[in-house]
Image (tube, rainbow, N blue to C red; front, side, top):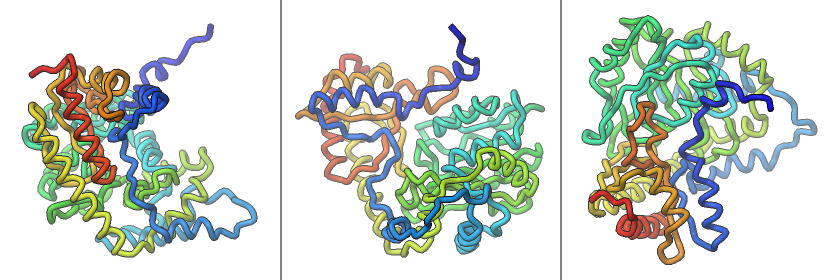
Amino acid sequence: MPTISKKGDLMPASPIRKLVPYAEKAREKGIKVYQLNIGQPDIKTPEVALEAVRNMTHQVIEYSHSAGNESYRRKLAKFYQGIGIDVDHTEMLVTTGGSEAISFTLMSTVNPDEEVIVPEPFYANYNGFSVAAGVKVVPITASIENGFALPPIEEFEKVITPRTRGIIICNPNNPTGYLYSKKELEMLGEIVKKHDLYLFSDEVYREFCYDGEKHFSAMGLKGLEQHVVMFDSVSKRYSMCGVRVGTLVTKNREVIATALKFAQARLSPPSYGQVAGEAALDTPPSYFEEVYAEYIERRNYMVEALNRMPGVICPTPKGAFYTVVHLPVDDTDRFAKWILSEFSYQNQTVMMAPASGFYSTPGLGKQEVRIAYVLKKDDLALAMETLAEALKAYPGRTK
């Protein structure tokens, strides 16, 4: 029998999606499954985007430019300029989701066997993108004790080697919900400049910043214009994950030209998705005001409910719509399977993402899960009640 590639063997399964078969079996039994494992908001997609797709009059759905439709890129440039990011339409590529922006960037800037530093826990697919590009992830561990703040800069200095090419951050952070401050980004910027590295900044949750906190883009770091590459996406901002449209943005023309070659090889980003993305830029401010209020209510309810459970530790996230939670169990991979396959409360159960898959350091995250507060409050309340009962019944509870 032919063998599987080494890269295929190394490719990690998604901690977010690997439990789907267990959830499907639970549903087959008639059990209601509350999905808190994945960042799929139940917020309605803006009507202006839906109408644009409904009203398409194209007789042929053609390939777009490999960099994305110029009309969309020009409109995106105005959007970015409006939030203080000084770019034009030639300094970006439209990609198939933010995922492709990350993959293109890694392949354009990092050689196989070279390294990128990432504060952990981090978005699990950074592991997958890095394996696909032949890049080694070097983790710097953040702690739940201080809400997963940026680790001390000295920790970054310790792991920088001649093979280090860049640092990846996600701001606000997925999976922790931590919002990096301007000061923290400036400290990272100093290291990036000192060692002539790239700073890869995933900013897809930019609009989701709470408690009066403001987002500061890495694109605003002075003197680092040639070092910063920003990743963006319409998935979360407009609650339209399925259109698969993202953006790679940088002032570094060489990175753009190189990434464009990878973009040409895959031909073009999705045509319908670009129509929806371009129209979504006209979403009225009232939409975001309602979304903001909804997520604040969900977050506050969930954090309070979790911290009332004995042995549970849940920091208050300042952004995005996730939090990493400590549970009093022996192994959250085991617990997440058990709650789906062997437990139900009032004919309902909960699906979560074990946090071990968000770490690169072996053994970390074994008592943590990522929870996404993407369900309406009534469903969240039932999910929290179910989780509390499950923790009481779980045979592997630690205290």
